Length: 632
Image (cartoon, rainbow, N blue to C red; front, side):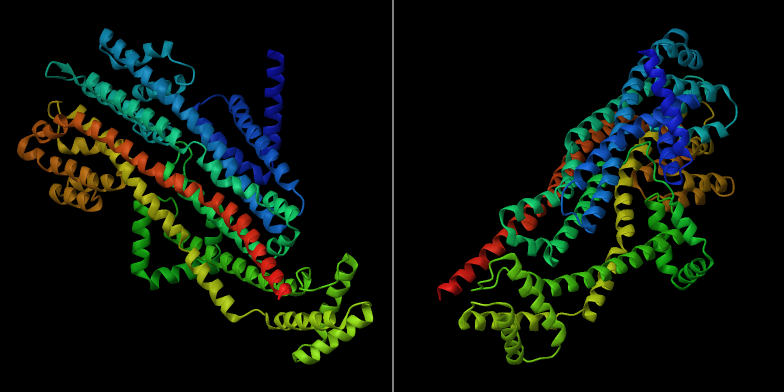
């Protein structure tokens, strides 16, 4: 068994090195490897094995979906594009689920480990010794992270903390590092007969438990919604084949403009629903938003660079709003890249909508003479007769561009007499009238300039997609602000009971362990020595988030009341804030679940309603009308 595992690992390493040479796979491999370097750091050999394990698992599942989808008969280009896009989305979802499961394991292990640290700190009273001794019983998954924290505590370089921020699995490890570093530097403080370090450790455990419960509730609420959302795309062709097998006349709906438009709408609503549910569910702590490599390359093209710079120079107010939105949403793209992305979406959307409108016009036009099975009173029952009849219509469409109905009708009847024998004059007259009307409609259908204007309008609306997503991220980022405020409060409560503590030291520690508020805090620390009041006032203006503003107001009151008295409200209401956050999490998750479930069913409803039921109803009504016309 060990030899088999060894051979499998060696095969994974060999495959990893082969795929690493592939231009299209190297970015995907590096993304997964970076995730595992954060979650479970290990040697290079082990990282290759872990990376290939998740890659092979995802590729196997997606390959099965690929084979199932492409085995359906009658697939067209649109269907292939839809399936490829959905396979990519499905693969991203599999990666998210694997990473989320690993993140939850780390949280559960961290909660137990904090209890062990508390026990050893009680026994020895030394932070470093408590962390080191508790590592002996720590699980293998947690040991690399704790060892990294232990080395940072022993090191005197502040850059180590900055480096750790980039590889920390979640914010709780950073908070634990901050509590340990403060205690190591200033010593533990006894307040009201209790250890401040142990009290903060208990609060940290409570926060970890709240996060675990939140993740479990989220997993329960969003379980299966993503798969339910993308499932209809894989069964588009199956539904179409089933409908045509039961009612062959439905082919003109599925192969015509109606089927193409509805399938594209189902695809667009599927992508939109997936985006909405992903935003409601929230992103993983480890899967970070990557900078767009190709957008950067396009922005570096001299012509594009000059045009974007000119736009920024001539539209200062719009540029300022975009810059503020990107900052508030924590987007990693620059203003130039954001504008370039919007323009590219507009350009490609315009090309796609224009191509689609041209093709829909052509298909609608051809269907006017292609589907002749619905002709009333027709005696053309055999396939050969219908094909001959179709060829007659096609030839007449091209021969008579602008003929009146009577002349066209006579020409059709003369052709029918040459090709078909045994048809009565009444049938000839009826077929000629209907064919003349159909050929006239064929000649009237053409591409209008209004279609192009509509394509421009739709492409322009779609170009606002990056802005809409940034607004959504800005909204959900406010929830992360609350978490960071709680982290800063824990750091402050560790420091306020230390003798000779002042505002500048508090700001420096807040800067060291902040992420969302980091840039304004850096600016505040830099200007604090020149003008304390102005620096703090500017900090409140940069971050108008009320809970953070309360912290800044307490900092302003430190010179007047003293550090400990200025923050007595935070210390007294800490339990209340924790319980309030727990309740807010439950309410927020319940509201998100209602919205997500409603959104997830939209593609399925469109598949069953508009793609399956509506064509049946329309064809049934058409056949009923034909039957009533025959009876009349």
